[in-house]
Length: 146
Image 1 (cartoon, one colour):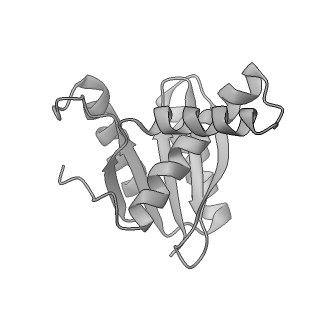
Image 2 (cartoon, helix red, strand yellow):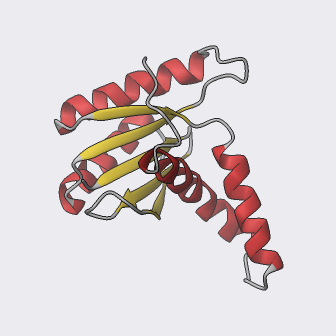
């Protein structure tokens, strides 16, 4: 099942896609947007173009497991997107996904890869989306019951 994961931010939206078998997550793109509606429209076009069958959206829960304004906004956005796309939606906890992605980029830079500050910003959100998508596909990250 081809799955698209989304790390929704206020200015950047990280996207990752699974393979058709739903086993491997790959960073896909980072969209720079000025409004959530713009992100929604761009993602809807991507869903059609890439044959996406399921949406996984990371929810930024607070560290104490509470649901703050950012999480509520993300859930509402995700539900609207899924309804418009006609695709099943899975919400997952995306806490620390950006931290893990940052650590990956640091390790790659230490390994000799040339990564500029601009390049890091451009790839970080897609890497975060791929990280929580892979954890979900591997059964290590359960769906949230929101």
